[in-house]
Amino acid sequence: MEDDRVVLLPSKNKNFKLANDNINLGVDQIRTISFRKKNSVLKGTLLGLGIGAVTGIIIGFASGDDKKEPYYDYNQDPYGIGNFFVSINNAFTMTAGEKAMAGGIGLGVSGAIIGSIIGAVTKKKFIIGGKKEVYRDLQGDLMKRLIVQ
Image (cartoon, rainbow, N blue to C red):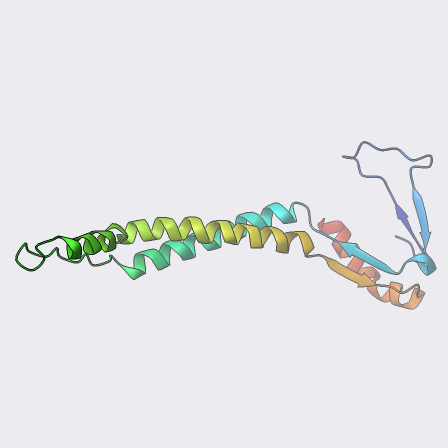
């Protein structure tokens, strides 16, 4: 970075070559400069997965076990129709551990999807607008971003 131009160098990790390795841009040609952190999608995915899984596990354990209904006696339900419905209801009861596992998986997957989307679209944008004064004002912040990355 200089006071009146920006020089772009090719990345060391990329396998492409230009006729001239450096690209010189005058400040009057620059409208915006955007930065995105390395591995931001992966970091967002892992963060969303962790937060979602922990939240689902806590909610599952906090909700406790479901109560099972007792079956009817033969005298109360001689044909077994009521017991049929009780058995269907009891088939869907869950323990706190089962709820924690289901909640951890469900919220973990949804958190990972949301985190990857947020990591993909999040970036820091500097609006220059082709003005040297704005570029000079933002030059310190731009240098900090380049050094951090």
